[in-house]
Image 1 (cartoon, helix red, strand yellow):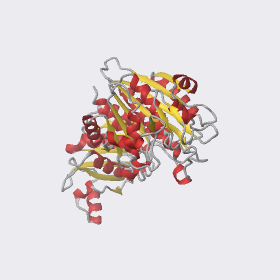
Image 2 (image 1 turned 135 degrees about the vertical axis):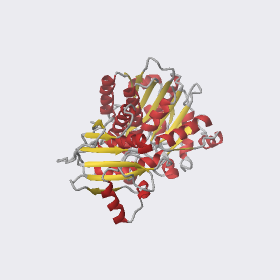
Image 3 (image 1 turned 180 degrees about the vertical axis):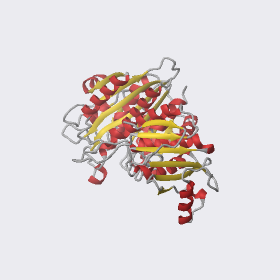
Image 4 (image 1 turned 90 degrees about the horizontal axis):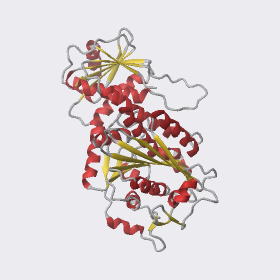
Length: 477
């Protein structure tokens, strides 16, 4: 549950106050608790404009914990988000029931939106299983300043999408098996009015979706499925397909992961959670765009039935795939899902997946990588990343890379054993399964988990992709 937002013209009585000022070499005379701030800066030997880099906090005479920061209008969205997040954490670490946010000057609207959104996404409680959970959720936010209230409804919807993504991603694998995940999605679809359709293992076998089935057949309980959700708007002129990798746990299969790399593999369904978060945010905002959401939900287990190296499987589009490494399961389940999604002929298709270790090696955890079917689309994706604060780096996918995937016994190899440029080879592989020349973006979510938080989000699992995806959808109408 997100904290209730109230707008006020005067500062209320509060225990926790965030003051966001526009960057300036001197403090405004009417800054809340200005005398205290001057004393704090003097004690720390800080200049006023250093608040644009380092927020500070102190207790007022009445006991109120006050945090101050300056927002630099010339900084990019990511830098502004980091500053506001750091300032908020000085207050939220005490788990208050309510906070007040005071904004003023030329940056008032921007500061208000960042602070309120940051308070929403960083104060809600993510799932935790402890005998005694002593965490306290934020209940009320009071915003003080001359601002337009209209953007906050959309921001609240986006915050709900971000939190849904993070909540699903952190759930323990025994609490979010493919079967349980599917039940949860069905209930969510009923509550939000989305059309719901499932392609279970029986139906997928009948369709000939051998790439997906190869991975999912290793589970003792065949509860895997491709789930299709549909949101329609009466004024929509464009349809966007969202495709998400939903591997609820990845052992690596017969090519078993060592414990170091198997840890946190319940988060390998993050791509599907991001897709769901975008769908929720878009439908709550009633964005005038039709959305087809396709979720490839399965697990990658080791068992006598599990697929193995040198198997040859036939995908939904008739392509024969030579299996090289069973831990490259994400591209297998996505292959058939992309075919289904592209056959519906959307105007744009975007897939999200925690797909390759090589993308994390290339970028670390502070950027995610993106591949596009055109240079124009790649530039749009990168620019949207800069505007949303969820940063993307575009990578090449030139045709000559695909020579590495040539197979002597099938149409294509699933991957190589060397792993060189695997993020690029995975994209070339997936491209084989996109039909009708569908405009397509592939997002490799190397930044889905970032120690210390990322951008506006303070937790390691950060819901990266939801804000970016919503911004991309807004650009389609």
